[in-house]
Image (cartoon, rainbow, N blue to C red; front, side, top):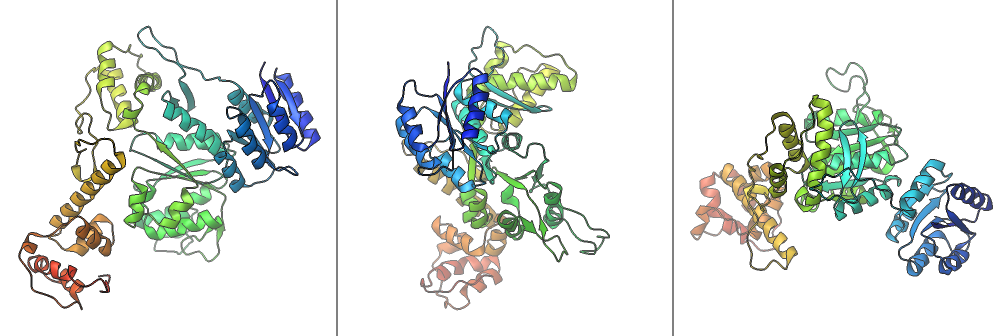
Length: 507
């Protein structure tokens, strides 16, 4: 029999939860405060799971949780709280809490949490004789969408999603293109208190910059030519629900400042509006770019990054969770066979070998297309990948560089990142005939950042090989952008030779 411990200073709450759980066949002990809870934890048998109130007199829930982790590190602890305290919930998660339930406790959610953390109830899809499948978790999300986890990293990610979903804070989802960031966002919404409300995905890169503000925040009548009537934006349409801002790094900085106001104050102004609009929206953000690099380049505001990064989830690429390739293939086929009115095809050994040998640079999106071709045409050969096997595409068309020392991973990553940046800068300068202001605009970075990185990577024009004459410090920067490309290169070294006290002006 599974043993549980319920800790709460409310006697009525203790009686209710004990009665409910005992009716489900669990052995339940109770404690009215933190000290009693610690005594019960040392008793035999130890509980497999603890339901722990956050706010109690004397030793509060966080202190009790910390002590429980030292006594029984394996026990699952689910926090109960009648107060909306996101900071306390985050602290509890950091201390090792498995989940969080709001009071008054919903009976269905409570039983779901107990079943999840007091025993393993994952269901695996059927396996054939040639394939061993164990502990595969699969959750349907409606339509053709589902979440599947077989790799340890994805199972851990699923546990994190279940914990974070009920904490009403922003979440930043990162990962390569096609890894399933939208699925994670839908999973967060499904397990959140907002699950009965609307979930809306907005691709910031797919909407023209001049339209994005009006689409997100709406406008008043007469705000611009053609605005005959007022229109609510996506944030108002998604009130009380969840909104996913995909490709957040592509949002213009001016709109990032407005989004920051929504995160901080839950209010904004429509275009042409004179009074603020209040909304209650949970914001999820997703990106496939290096967010730290985007901050360095000025594409993502640092204050917005910190606001969005209350929680962060990173999806590993498909090539790092190869045990999921075949189960994902089968699930895609099951859904697609219904949608396309086609019978499912058996997975041949040749196709299985092709799947496992492929590097999947397109991740789940690529796998989805392969399944569709196999289902409709029976094609067992995979299309040639634009990226060579075992190599990951880097910005500027560069590839992973072989190295004799594979032990210092951070150093390898730094070197590869630097090479990619240098290649992108050289390409932009070549396209703009070495007009640095134009090259900076093309790269989406400020002028000073381009100058700094050019110096860092030793990027010089062909004209700079000859020793240039000296140039006075005053006006040197302006001359670089005003002169023709044939002269700008020869003056670059002299401008860079100006002392560190030179004041850099924006062009």
